[in-house]
Image (cartoon, rainbow, N blue to C red):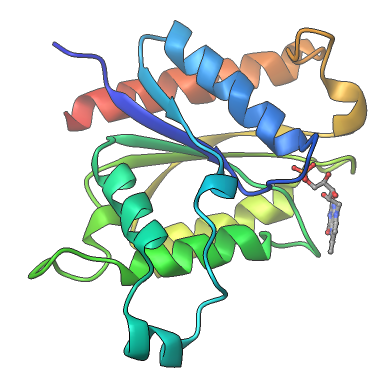
Length: 193
Ligand SMILES: Cc1cc2nc3c(=O)[nH]c(=O)nc-3n(C[C@H](O)[C@H](O)[C@H](O)COP(=O)(O)O)c2cc1C
């Protein structure tokens, strides 16, 4: 049986982003758990802020269609979500909104969010480690898009101190949490195959 394909990205394109580091570490752990991992940066898929008039005039942008295709080609998705004002970043929400508008001819709305498993994690310098962002992201993915989001998640608190020189998590509990998320996502994506 071929290894489950899992897509990984972060909701930040900031230089030195903690969540990009978390996404990179999750990708490494997913590969160790036996997944076939694709890690992308949203920097490579710039999108305008969603505007219904633009969509009516010009359709869904090519980058949103590419991201939809990328998601469709994977059975698992890991998103590292930063926290802005107790919610997800505009970059991440806008990306999900555009993907939710991109669909193949004849495909029901939001079909690309079904038939695959999502897992979420977040890193922030606060003591809560982007926890509120993950709650907001669950609302968007589960209630908004009808996605299956696994209950296991990883929160990295005091993120500026959390990673060692090799970009591994210093805290054993956090490292164990990440491994649990990764193993569960790999299993779930494999079951969907
Ligand atoms: C507009 C804005 C709002 C923020 N709000 C929160 C917040 O509610 N909770 C939090 O923990 N950090 C908050 N932060 C700090 C971010 O979590 C921090 O900048 C983090 O490094 C962003 O993730 P990144 O490192 O992946 O870019 C906020 C930052 C910005 C720019």
